[in-house]
Structures are given as C-alpha cells and as structure tokens.
Length: 307
Length: 95
Ligand SMILES: [Fe+2]
Ligand SMILES: [Fe+2]
Image (cartoon, helix red, strand yellow):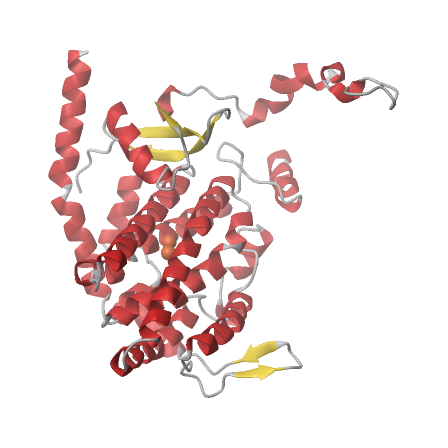
C-alpha cells in the first residue's frame, strides 16, 4: 500500500512522523501506551519527593525541591499532550491511572525514608531517566521527540541538584554520611530495574527498534548507566552495593551482578512497598479537585453566554 | 470521574524580541484567560518566552498531509525565488 510505503520511507530516512500522517495501527497503539505510561510515571513520580517538601532542612533545599517536583508535573503534562495528538483522551488516561489499569515506572513504588533519598533520587533515578530519555529525543514520532527535548533540558538540573545535595551531606556528620550510604544501598538496584526486563525477555523491543520509537535496547542503556554511575559514586565516596561490580577491560565496560528480576516483576504486578498508596493518593487528589474543574467550567460557560 | 473536560488549546511562544511565535505544545483550560496562565506555568518556567499566544485547537485550519504535493506545488517550481538562482561573479562585493 502507498501510505504504508510512505510511512516506512519517512521512518527509514530518520524523518519524523507527525500527527496527521498515516501510521500503522500498531505504531499508534505502541506509542499511546508508551507515552501514557511515561506521563503517568512523571505524575506519580512527584509523590516520593513531594513527601519531603514540608520537611526539607532549609529554605534553599525546599525551594529547589518544589521547583523539581513542579517540573515533573510539567513533564507529565507535555507527555499527556503528546499522547493526545495520537487520539488518546486525557480523561480516559487519568481514569486508567487512578483505576490501576495502566502502569507507571516501578521505581516510584519505593518509599523515601530519609532526606538523603531526595539526593539519591536526583542522582540515580533522574540519572537513569536521562539515560533512557536522551535517545528518545530522536524517536520517530515528532510530538514525543519534542516533548523529550524539553524534558531532557530540565532533567539535568534534577540530577545535579541531587548530586550536590549528596556531596553536601558527605561533607557533613558521620550520621549524614551513613544516611547517604543507606539510601544508595536501597536505590541502586531498583534504579537498574528502571531500564526494564533484559533484552531476551523484552517482547516489544524489536518492533519498537524497527519503528525507531526506541533507539537502544534495555540492556544497552542499563550498561551505559552503570558505566556513568561508577566514577560518580567514587567521587562521592560511596560504594555501590554490588560485589561483582568490576571494570572489564576487554569489553570496555563495567561488569555487574545479577538483578533480582523476581522482585522487579513483583513490584510491576502491584506488590511493591507503595503501589497501593501511590495510586490511592493520585485518585484522592483527582477526586478532591473535581469541584475546581467543575467551577472553572461553569464560570467559563457563564461568561460565554454573557458575551 | 468527572467528565467535564476542558477544551484543548495550542500554545505559541515568542522566545525573544525579534523572533516569531513558535508552537511549543498544547494544554487544557476552561477558558482563554486560564489557558494563558497555564501556558505560562507549563511552557515558560525558565524564561523561555517574552510573549505567549493561546488558541483553541478547534479554531485552527490546517493543510492535510495527503494533499501536500498539490497544495505546496505552486512554490515548487519557482526556483527564481531563491537567491542561489542568480549567477553573480565572485568578485562583486557585499552581494
Ligand atoms: Fe521528569
Ligand atoms: Fe526529573
């Protein structure tokens, strides 16, 4: 078919598919699912750090954290808007999230126990997100790629504020250093899981690569993240909790230990430490906001009648 | 779920004086004024713009990609609209 050949030509030439172009149904569905899950992750991702806004140790840290959490809300909204260009409906996407019918990144189902977690999230969780997201700036669907470009620009602040926070704590008291080490121990493995299942178990990778939605496999990105993080950990003065972590001169990469995939699937399927709490909180916020949405719509309708 | 969904707006931002407004994305808002405020919070958190336009997405008329050949054809064969069409000796300055 003519349209299909044109679509394949555009993708193969590394040009962008735009909203009004013809696209295969599978391409549209894959994108809606991926972008929606990505948007949900940004929105749910506000919660673990949001927990610490009122307890931040200084006005400076509070202002920074507030700005970061607000950015994450913005990221969610850019992405919902990109999903809508594919025909998705915003209310439907929200419903899918609060009814637990659509997933978000499992990393946000872990609790933030101390303020050091805020730093480690910025360093490792935003760091892993950056690894995932930088290649998506060249994804084949135009609105998604443009949203990712905006997001990536903002993420570098997120990672740097986290790392700076941790450097400050490492220069502090013994108790503060212990807090950082404890947070790194808890977040390192879940951060590695953020890249998704290993390539041989990742069902959709091959098709997504062919459509140039994805540009690298899960394992490639995970390796890149490990290679970036090890020297950063050394500079910080923390040990990553993996005895098998070692430079492999032959590969030119760090080797690392086996990820606990049973834990990964358990959390994905809903049995992480905070899954229920995160979704319930989002549902509550949505329901509590209903009267505001209704009042604003009623006010707009009244003004339109008067005009 | 409250089904009172707000209309979709397209957002255009002028990055700085001297540049055109450029489309940056979209958002939902109950009315024009709220669309403008939401656009400020969403798309210009870091001084990305000096001026914002918002317009209801339903008010936009667009060319369709399917008609791209005939629709843009009138400009396709007018190569003389481009400066490179003209041969000028290299030793003519400032041209
Ligand atoms: Fe984000
Ligand atoms: Fe972030």
